[in-house]
Image (cartoon, rainbow, N blue to C red; front, side, top):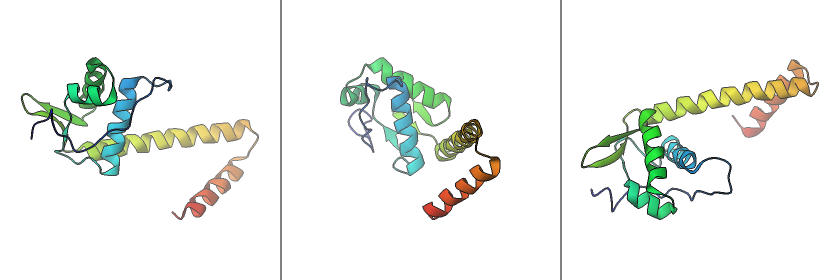
Length: 135
């Protein structure tokens, strides 16, 4: 497969209006695609040039996003063949999301305490939310 001409997904557009740097927006989109199963281990990603053209960003922006994802073990590059989703990318993305969820829970508890909610009341509300979501 020619990595410059094909790729399994189209990433959502990036925006300068968002405070998050463009390369981080690209990385988040790739992580979401991996976590959701839209990207599978071994899938090829568009070349730097192609994705930069599609997203209307500088090639260096895409390169930075891909390099960060490679450093995290989500992507791997093979000279002359392209950039691929790593074999254990799904597990890495899900572990990162679980860590983020835990951080959000801790922040939620801290916010609830600052608002005067007791731990028991916060936990009761969390249980209601879980029940309401059908989990």
